[in-house]
Image (cartoon, rainbow, N blue to C red):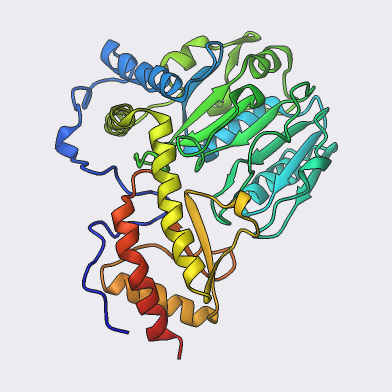
Length: 372
């Protein structure tokens, strides 16, 4: 096969940190807060805008709260689990490495005696009909390392007694989320919006706030996890008064990403971009029998972290990944270290469809080079 002549304009297909938005230019950022305190009026205003603009663009219910928290999506999930879990049983859902990590934290760190895990291997989902909504439920909406997502929120009970805690870091701004079914949602800036790392977003429903104000965990809470004072929610946290010092440069970068989302028409436009990107790969897979989706069913295919299996041994897959990187065609597309050997191509909204279209012939070319 002749080597393709057209390369992607951006070869960045990493699943995190993800590609910056099209047209991104650091010189366009509002850097007025650099060198200023995050406690200053300006700092609080910009951090507050991170919360209010997130809520507006996502179309959150008016009584949901949004906060900027430490330690990326991981920090946000840990804050929720350590602060909220305990008074009820908890169902832990896992079908890839990050979900499995939350299982470990609940069962081996918090050591909750009334926890049960519902697991599935890479490519599958657990039996969602077995979830007990009298319990709290912790799950990832989209398995970033498996490319497997829940198809929708129909399986979540509207009359649930427990809380739903959803790690949605590679789903927010790319997939439809039924907010009324989700009591805690977490994500990080460096995923779908292509922002910078180290900061997380925590979204709470009124039911989650009620739990925070009525329940005190029996274990000590580190300072960066504390969301209440004197039994009441620390409301200032949800208005930009962060627990610890954030990067105001990263704040400027996130606000730029939100502005870009708004300029395209909001979340629906970003969902459409991600879906169109997935279609490029779907068409390619349909035409090439040597490559397949890790997700077993079409309904559970991620439109962000697209995970693919190849009919090659692991060493050949690694050679393919290395070859594409050496050609400057695709960076960071190897599968996650705990996942089955394969490739993972980020298809979130910051990736241009034209770049994926340019990548597909190179995938076929690289396969032909390494298969023998």
